[in-house]
Amino acid sequence: MFRILAAASFAMLATAGQLAAAPAAVPFRIGITAPTVNMLPIWMARDTGLFRAHGLEAEIVVTDGGSRGLAEVGAGRLNEMTVGLSSVLDANSKGGDYRLVASGANTLSLGFFAAKGISAAQLKGKPVGVSSFGSESDTAATFTLRRLGLARTDVTMVETGGTEKRLELLKAGTIAASALNAPVNFMATRDGLPKLVDLANDVPWIFTGMVFSTNYIASNRAAVKNFLKAYVEGIHLALSDEARAKATLAREFKNLTPAILQDTYDDFKLRVPRDATPSRQGAGSMIRELAAQGLRLKSTSIADYIDFSLLEELRSEGFFEATQAKYRVP
Image 1 (cartoon, rainbow, N blue to C red):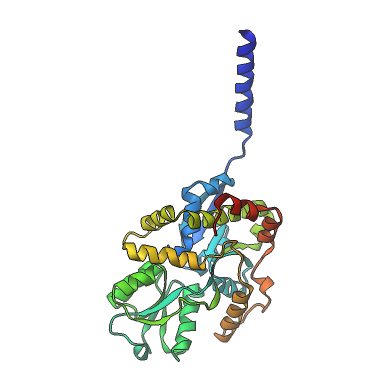
Image 2 (cartoon, rainbow, N blue to C red):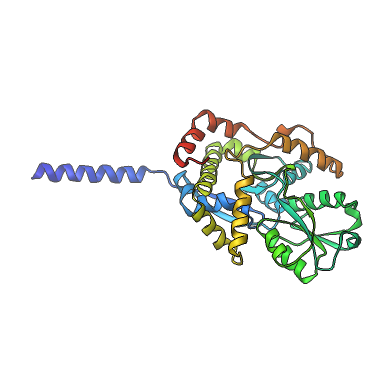
């Protein structure tokens, strides 16, 4: 009897020792510009415990603009910013030192909408809303204006916050036009706002990316790789479990009809790169586009804005093979 009790006591002590030795989850603050469909893998990873499974205690912070979020990363108040490459090009050309390490969308997925009663010919002198200057919505708006034969100086660019806020301002007539991402672009169509230009096409573009400061990557490489593991698993989970993914979208966006919910999920499936690898073609297109818009770039080398090495390490370690075997995403 004593031996049984002693063995049980030893096992309990050993288990307690193992629990005590388990490393605590690392606090990890994730910035997003605004709720959009591109945030789905992050929400899935948070809600299903994938971040915690990879050693991170994740907190998601809405920054209402990519340039604002990158400034928070630079100040150390955010660990990662989820933002397009435009913001990195802009920030690094102004003295920042950031690297995009993964992509959530390698093509543009926007509609450029106007307030009711406003045509492209009527935009001159009117306010065009962007989340923040230097953000993806800012670059996309300038890109679209050029397609309409207008210069940025022909309109008044105003910072108005995230996509849902811009939709409300369009509906109120406070701004004349804005570029909107899914699902808000589908909501704008439902609300009868005129779409001046459809940018939901195959234009190569790194519309959403995972961005860190170079200092953080150098000193916390393991944490960055763990974030990427959880993020990539979030992609695969969202693709392999449509019901759960759509339930997540329905919770994050309160006013989605079943049709808009399906369109939003289908847009995600169409655009998300399964391995989160940034498009070199998209990066080249954006470097040329921002230079054409007048931005004095730090350089034209992709390596000054994108770090592919972390995903390459995960690939060499067999992570992607294991993830595919686990989720079996086609």
